[in-house]
Structure formats: structure tokens, C-alpha cells
Length: 152
View 1 (spheres, rainbow, N blue to C red):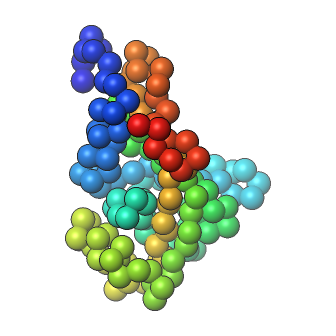
View 2: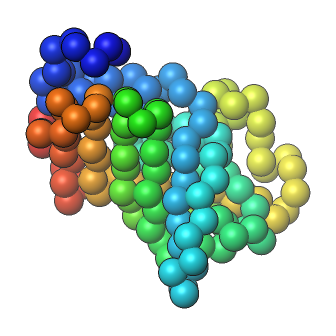
């Protein structure tokens, strides 16, 4: 999108967010440990059943932070086309993860963590807040979801 294009209305932004959640494969995952030490990594994801599903090892900082803190901030895009998602996290062991979510993850990424190391888990991030904007001109009305409910 060019800097001089007309700002999108909130409904269009929501449609764009949902399209990107369906189409993009990588998402930035920000978490923090109990001392507040931040961790930021890109992970594969799938948008399934109104949640973002991630998979990573429970033994790495991101897995530990997501399990213990039960909150995450996710980001799509670059600095000129931003989507930020704040959400609550639920950890699912490989034996516990709903089959539909694991199969959706496999279909999108081509990887099935259930057939990998037992140290992997799935992390379901239920959005509580969503913001989306293209540069400064779209900062007003960037909040598309609050308290888990879409505003548009």
C-alpha cells in the first residue's frame, strides 16, 4: 500500500486481518518470563477456530514463557502494514491437542509436531485485542477487537 492511498475503514481492516491470518505462514511471537525478560521469535501458525495455533518446544524460552505466562503478543507485517494481536494462551500437549487444530496446522505448514520430538506442544492463542494500521494515517480507529469481541 502506498503512503498516499486512502485509509481503509475498520471493516476493511478486519477483512484484511482475517485474510492475512489465513494466508501468511509466519507470525512474530512476543512473550516474557517471570522476571519480565522479553523473547521475540517468528513461528509458523495457523488461524483455526478463531484462534492462532502455534507449535514450539516446551523446553525453549518461548515455550516456557507461553506455558507459564499464558499471554502473548503476536505481530504480522512490517512497520508499514501492522497487525498486533494480544491474546490468552492455552498449552496443549501432543496427545491432547484437538485433531482438527493439529490437522489444520499440518495442512498449512506441511509439518506435524505430533510426529516430531515429544518436547513439542501446541499453543492456542485466543485474541483479546487486535489492532491494524497502515502507517500514521490509519492510527485512528486501529483497535478492531477489545476484550475478545470484534468492534466491527
